[in-house]
Amino acid sequence: MNNFSQQQQKIRSAASRLLADGTVRFVIGWAPTRFAERTTVLFAHTEAEAQALVWNAHCTAALGKYLLDHRLADYAVGIVARGCESRMINRLLTDHQIWRERVYILGAPCPGMDAERCAGCRERAPVVWDELLWDADGMPETGGRQDAAPTNLDEATIADVGAGLALPAVGAACSRPLDTDTSLRSRFFRAEAVEGLSAAEKFSYWDEVYAKCIRCYACRQACPVCSCRACYVDMDRQGFQGKQHSAADNRVFGVTRAFHVADRCVECGECERVCPMGLPILGQTQKLIKEIEALTGEAYVQGMDAEEENFLGAFDLDDKDDFL
Amino acid sequence: MMYLLKENFDKAREALAGAYAVVVPDEVLPPKDALFPRSETLYETDRRTGEARAAGAGGKTLLFGVRPCDARAIGNLDAAFLESGYVDANYAQRRENATIVALACAQIPSPACFCDSMGGSPHEAPEADVVLTEAADGSGYALDFQSEKGSAVAEIWKAADLIGPMPAHLEKAPAPTCTLKVNKVPDLAQKLTAAFEDGLWERLAEACLGCGCCTYVCPTCYCFDIGLENRGGTADTFRCWDSCMFPGYTQMAGGHNPRWSKTQRLRNRYLHKLAYFDERYGRTLCVGCGRCICRCPQGLDITRAVEWGERL
Ligand code: SF4
Ligand code: SF4
Ligand code: SF4
Ligand code: SF4
Ligand code: SF4
Image (cartoon, rainbow over all chains, first blue to last red; front, side, top):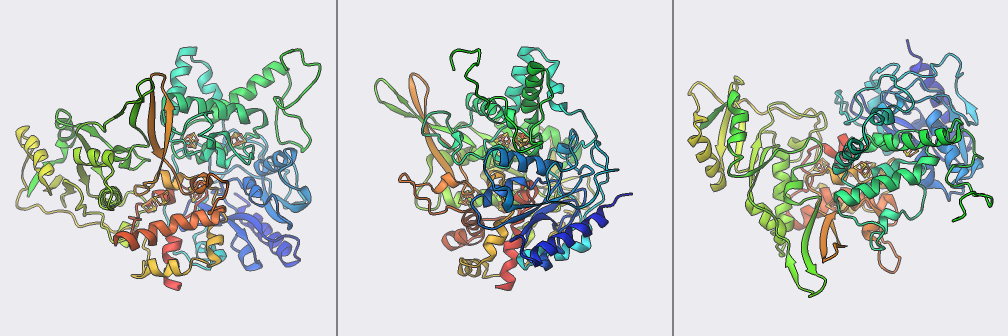
């Protein structure tokens, strides 16, 4: 049994209310597409559009990154936030990318969606919210996909209220490469899959992975940590790294991305979900987080509040490494 | 009409390996990668003497199992790289060396396919040299050899005794129809261009991440960037895929960016696919393969822009 439809109603009513009383300019949530097992992201601007928001196992995209598009906004933005979105929001707050008072957070405890990125998720209840839409008690704390009930196709007809276009339903899955095994796994499942290998085997494993990389940088675009206005990969004339796809450049990109994000990574798994080539790149950040935990002997979980220090960003004059 | 038994399908592919480098298209990336590679060296310059030398663009290839939409997409790339007044040497060489063996779709491979709404057909690939179409009883493939390059393939298969005349009682299976039906109005290009300032573009783009997946998996995107790589003894000039979904694509040296917002960038992609190419080459760039719909991580759907035409 799932509560998706009741909870969906709560999302719609809350969003309608926020739009009606002018608290926010729009509410970011999900809407159905014409494909049964896919949703898209909807910015609901009106109460009518709020009635097109959906909540089901196919709400796989994380919404947090969109807040960056509105970081200079002089208006408030509403957002439906599960565990992953709430940690993304904390990430953006910690990094001084958004104003807390310009985000209205509708907390939505999550049962785990039909995406591989949810399989290792340990924080399903939001950690920051303005309004908790339903109780997190009784929600499974862990556990991959809980219920892959298809998108209610009747709703596809109102999916495009936002754009004033009605979409006839097609009614079959249109899957992405990695959304296959959504069973529950350990927090560091990708890293653990590689850890047993010898150094040489690891090297060739990652070389094989990155040989497939087409350097589209979707992994960066989706990542809430990647908030730099100018990313080093776009400075290809400065000589950090070329734009060509070669073993060496792909390797440099893979390692650099991992090191730029790992100590601030909120483990949302979006980088991997969006990769069109289906590359298991979560393994890198998971491994680095594991290493941080091993080095400090403490749990290292980012995005739990908006004040935390990140491991590589912390600066201390008494640092024992005198080269600093 | 010649005929290939299903049980000989793999042998037919293997028989070609002697004469060609056989490329079987990847499930995600379109076959354009074999003609317009994601990254290629154009020329190498000797750093001591300053002498430049073209890197060349490989030998004979054969693309085996190309979908009809992708074959049609190659026709569009031909228009851009060969027929626009400038002949792109590397593309021309690869294209000249490439033989295209298309496999007509017996079933519609994806619910996002809409080639028959865009003027194509799951069973027709006039750009291909050979087309394999399943027989109605599923026992094998009817073979259409559509060019000289195709005849060369026929000779190899005949010599290997893999093909014979199609039995008289057999016929081609009827073409399947795409489940996704999109009403593309005849004057879509003019209508969308006229709606350039419409507020709907912004609504369509709101959910876009700007990740560029859609352009990298598109069989008809052909934008590239050119760069230099220091290889020690030589400086290599390479080109690699680029995407109009990236801000850097239109970034000027002085800092100005005429397409500074993602709405402008998405509008450019949709208009290039559905209007600008029509205006220049008289054919729609988007062939309706559905890849950008399937691979878009946020569920954006170009057919919304096509259907918008009905209301404009
Ligand atoms: S999303 Fe995947 S293919 Fe694209 S740059 Fe990242 S790792 Fe490479
Ligand atoms: S690196 Fe990947 S998992 Fe970590 S925050 Fe970025 S997108 Fe999420
Ligand atoms: S725009 Fe999309 S549907 Fe059209 S050819 Fe490109 S990938 Fe295929
Ligand atoms: S302009 Fe954009 S849509 Fe057109 S070919 Fe280039 S990348 Fe593709
Ligand atoms: S794949 Fe989707 S999200 Fe990414 S740039 Fe294209 S339309 Fe935008």
